Length: 238
Image (tube, rainbow, N blue to C red; front, side, top):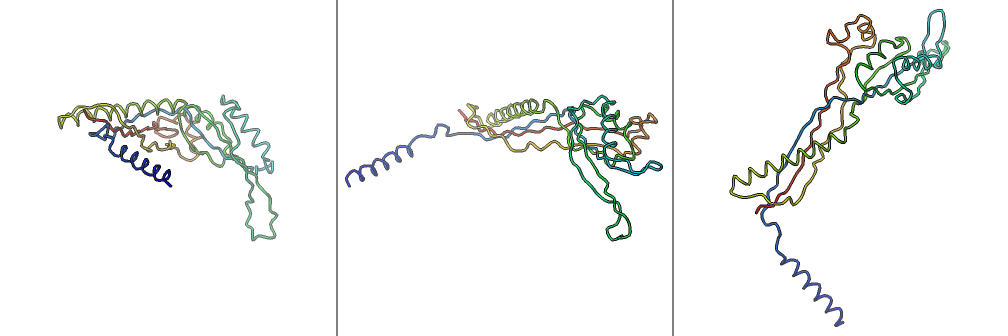
């Protein structure tokens, strides 16, 4: 019993000692610094959807031929297999389900994801695509091969901006800045969104053939990736 009382007394004494410990930073200033950077994407991810189709005089063009022709087109445009991957497979019937007399036939669809380094590479492929087999052409994501390094640079600039802000605010009230107490990264790093300006694929092919792909403001036009970072820093005042 006496031992239990001794332990309880020691706990109270310890708590009292910590409660009386002086605050090492009695005066602080809390500021947020931000920085932005725009970069041109060098990783452009495109999904191309292909489908079996009927060709007059030849009947149904099977998926195997559609695939082989597409991959040959990609290789002719200078794209290695390493930047080509299968995104999905699908099958559908063009006939109405209630038409019992019609003979249903399944048309297979395949989607490929391609990785480009510039919009010019996309131009080269688009002008060679099979209009009959190509059902959709969509940019799904853009990025940069050094995106993490750029994010790091922007965060550093945001911290420097926070320090500069803290210095002139402290000076305004006759104080001097001391050490940084805490540094917190605000979760405002939004995902990179593809910015793509195009018309229908048929028009795109026509524009490429006529040589007025860029002159008339059409075709592929990527805006820069905008990186914005915010850093919250608490500084001690002298």
